[in-house]
Image (cartoon, rainbow over all chains, first blue to last red; front, top):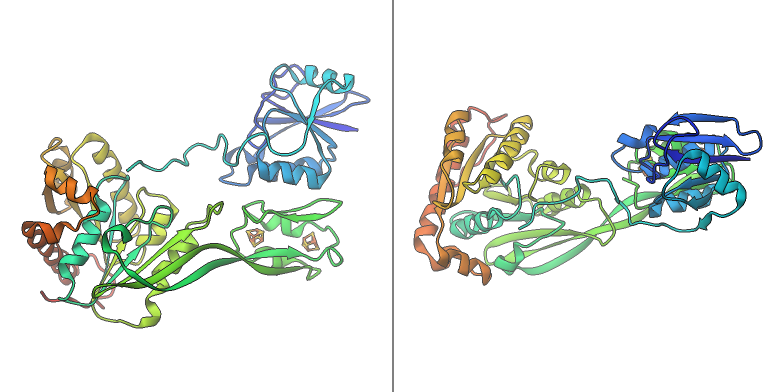
Length: 128
Length: 299
Ligand code: SF4
Ligand code: SF4
C-alpha cells in the first residue's frame, strides 16, 4: 500500500511538515518496498481549497493513508470521502513516520484537528 | 450619481462620514444609502431604518447524482476552488468552498450535476426618513461576501429611482468585497486619519481606486490629532482633500451613543454639504469620469 507523508523536503530524511494543505512536499512511499516518490505541493499558493486540492492529489496518486500534523475541516471531509486514513504525528523525519506507521503506534484521527483557514494568514480585518 | 465611501482600514470614521453625508442631504435630493459592509454592517445603528423587505441571497451549489456519475473527474479539474472532488469511490461537493460559478455542471459529460440554492446571506431594504436604505449580512459560516455585496447594490434598482444620489458605505480594507462595493461608482471618498497607519492604508486604497478608474478625494477625520504627512501625500499625488473633520471629544461621544452628528452640530451639517458640493463639482468637470451620464443634485 501507499503511504503519504507531508514533508519539508524530498527525501526520507526530510523533516515532517505539520501542515496538510500547505505542506511543502508530499513524499509517497510504497510501505512494502520502501520505494518513494516526492512531489512538491502545488496547493501551497492556492488562495482557498488547498486542503481539498491536496486530498484530490493524494487520491489520484493512490495513497491510502497520510501522516501529517494538522487537517482542517474541508480537507478532513475530503480525505474521508477519498478513503484515505489520517495519522497524526507532529515531529520527526519521513523515515520516522514510516517506521511509526509500520509499527502501528500512530494515532488515527477522523475529523479536523484545526478550524478552517488555520495558517492561511492575511484574513484579518482592520479593527474598528 | 453614485458616491462610495471607503477607507484602507477600519475605524477611520467611514460610516460616520457616509451616514452624516446622507443626513445632511436628506430632503434636498432623493438619497439611497447602501451599507455594503456585509460582514459587519453598522450604518443602521445610526440611521435606524424601518425595514420593509428582507430577502435571502443564495448561490447555486452543485449536487451530484451518483447514479449518473462515472467518476471521470472533469468537474474536479475545472473547479478553481477545489470545492468538488472526484474520487474513485465517489464525487463530493464541499459547499463551503463553492463560489457558485456553475462551471462543473456545465462541463459534466454525464449530466450528473444539478444545482440547488444555498443561502449565503440576506439583504434588507427599507427607509430611514426620506432616505431609501439597504444593507446585507453574510450568513454564519459563509465566507463569501462579494455576492452579498452585489445583492445589496442591486437591492434598490428595481425601485427605479433614477435621479439623486446613491451613497455606498464600503467595507474597510482593499479586498474583493471592497472592489465589489465601489466598482462602477462615479466618485470615491477615502476617509483616513492623519497618522502613519492611516497614511499607509490610504496609499493602498488610492492604488485600488486608481486601478478601478474612479476619481477620488480624501476626508481627513480627527484632524489635528496626528501629523501633516497625509496632507503632504495628497498634495504630492494631486488628490483633493475634500474635508477635514477636527478631532473633538463631543463628536466622539455623540458617535459612541449612536447619535447623528449633523443633528447635534450644525457646523458639521454645513461641512458635509460642502463636501457634496466639491464631489459634484468634480463630477461636472468630468475630467476623469467615463461617459458623462451624471445627474447632479442641487442644494
Ligand atoms: S464531471 Fe460529472 S461524471 Fe465526471 S466526475 Fe464530475 S460529476 Fe462525475
Ligand atoms: S459551481 Fe463552480 S465553484 Fe462550485 S463546485 Fe462547481 S466549479 Fe466549483
